[in-house]
Image 1 (cartoon, one colour):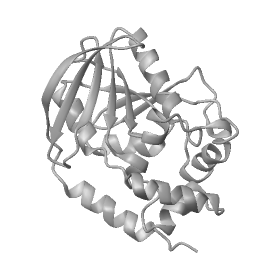
Image 2: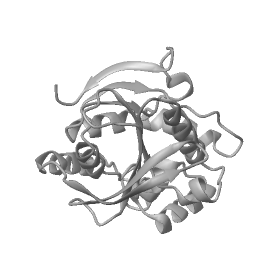
Image 3: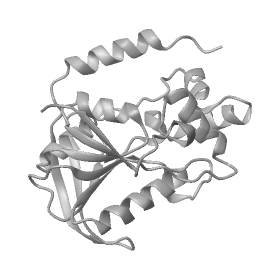
Length: 233
């Protein structure tokens, strides 16, 4: 059985809390017409990692309050190859479609493959899932936390874009808390649930049951927008 990850999680949280706010700067920008609508693409450098994270910006977000925002982590198998094992591609497409219909909004595309464990380890985790592990236990068996993602770079990107507060498009309560811990004011949550298919039904159920995602029976009964207040006032 996988060891209890609680002490390691507590140590990681203490280290995160002790870090200064992440700094990010735009390295390159261009107009990006897409099948979803018109965006401005910005590639960022940051002081937390060496990845080239991306912001797709629709409209004028500088100084914006309650800016609709999706923070999406890279998924080669889903986003590019169309894998049905997850809901990543559908979530990304829906976020771009929804934000393109708004006066303004942001999609951050973070290079954090496999919830932060990288492509090779993600495929190893898939193999363990084929042997009977769920998505959480597969990560733990490989020596990782259930979710290794860091949102410091995302916070730095939002600050660099001049955003004052966001309405976060997510089903993940941990993402809400981690962005707030990085100094981002999250004023509301926009539900972002995708209908399961035959191949990802157990995966989504596991995210709800073990990670507390607002999916299925865990989802609040509302009009799809939940009032929350996290981060600095």
